[in-house]
Length: 377
Image (cartoon, rainbow, N blue to C red; front, top):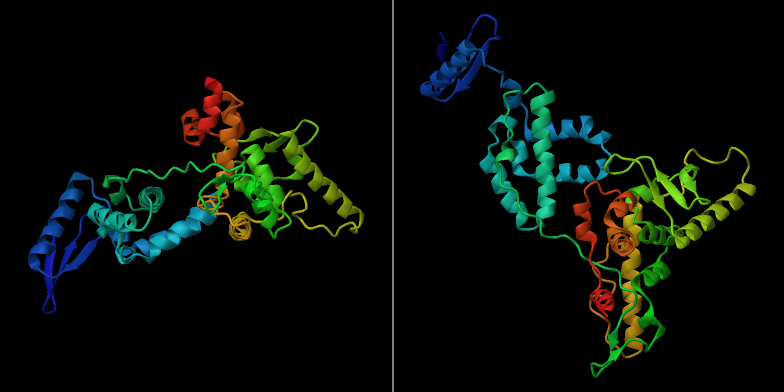
C-alpha cells in the first residue's frame, strides 16, 4: 500500500515501496493528487509495466538540447548548421520545462509562433531536431517512459522551394521605358560575371565557376582533396557526401580549366616553398571554410549590385529590379542542375548531383520558356 503523509502546511508526500522496484516518492499540493499518483505507480508495478519517469521529470529541455549537442550533433556532417537550430530552441521559454511536462499542445503553440516569422521549411527543420532529441532521450538516455510530443503535432507544408535561375545578362530600360539590352557593357554582363568581378576573395571566383559547372554542394567543394582530382579523366571523386554515399562527378572543360589553373599555381608555389613548410591541409583544393564561402559570396553579390546600379545610372538606364538580388550560393547548384537536366537523362543526372530519389530533381528542373519554345519550333 502507498504511504501518504503531510509535509508542512501545504504539501503532501506520496511514497510507493514494492519489492523488485526502487522506492518512489513525490510531493504534491493536495492529498488527492498524491493518492492518484501513488495508485497509478502501484498499478503499473503490479502489472509489470512501470518505467521510471524521474529522469524525464528532472531533465529540462534546455539540458537535453545541450546534451544532444555534445553527444549527438557534434558527430553529424551538418553540425555547424544544426548548432544554430539548437541555439534557437534553447532560447524559447519551453526549454525551461522538464521533458516529461512538455505536451503536443505546447509544441503546436511554439510551431505557430515560429511560423509568424519564418518559412515552413525553417520551422520543419527545427521541429525535426526537437523530435530527434525526444527520441534519443527515450531510446538512449534511459527515459523509456517519455513520449515524443512532436510526433503528434501537425507539420507545416513547405512551400518555399527556390526556382531562382542565374541571369546571363540583364535588360535595362531607358527613361522612356524602352528595352535597352545592349546600351552599355555593364548591362550585358551576366550575374556571375559581375559577382566574380566584385569578389574580394582570391578563391571565390574559382569556387563559383566550379559550383555552376559541376552542381557540387558548397561543403563538397571546400572539402575537395587534390588526391581525388583526376584531370586526365575529367573526374573528381567525392568519398563523403551529404547523403552518406560516395560519387564521381564529371568535369566540363571549363571546370577542368579552373582546377588546372589552381593546380599550376599550387605547383608553382611549391617550388618556392621549403620542404616541410606545408601544413596538414595542403592536400585540400580550397583552404577555406564553408561559412566563409557564404559570407564572401554575399558580400560579392552586394558589391556587384551596387556597381550595377551605378553603371545604369551613369548610362541613364533603369536597373532591373531582380538582377543581382535574392541570389544565394546554393542557387549555383540549382542553376547547374537545371542546365545539366537539358543534357542528361534523369537516371544519369542522379549520379552527377547525388540525389537518391529522382523525383527530388524536379524541384531543380525549371527550363526557360524561350528554351522550350525553341524545341517546339
